[in-house]
Image 1: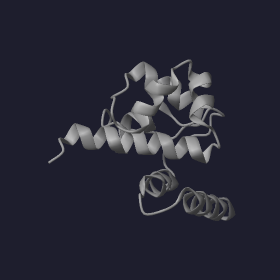
Image 2: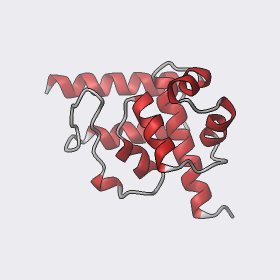
Image 3: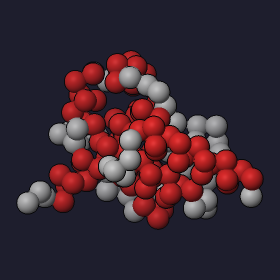
Image 4: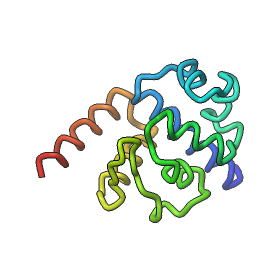
Length: 129
C-alpha cells in the first residue's frame, strides 16, 4: 500500500505535467525556463522526487500558476487557502473555477485533449456570466 506522501508526490507530478502540456511546453522547454535539469523535472512529474519550495516556485512561475496552487497540490498548504493569482495579477481565489480546473487536470480518465477542451469551455462560460 502506497504511503500518503507517495500519493501526494504522484498527484503533484501529474498536476505539473498536465499544466505543462496545457501550456504546450516540452519537458526540455520547462527545464530551460526554470534552470532545472530535464531528468530532475521528469522525476518530479513521475512522482519520484518531492521538490523543494524554491523549485515549486520556479515551476509555478514558468507555468503561470500561483505557487500556492502548487503548494496545495504538494500537500504543503491547505487547498482552501490557496489563491490562483496568475502572473498577470488576476486573482481568481474566490472563483469556483480554480477547483474545477484542478479537478479536470488531475482526472486520469481524461486525455490531454479532453482536458484542454473542458477547460476552454469552462473558462468561456465563466467569461459569459
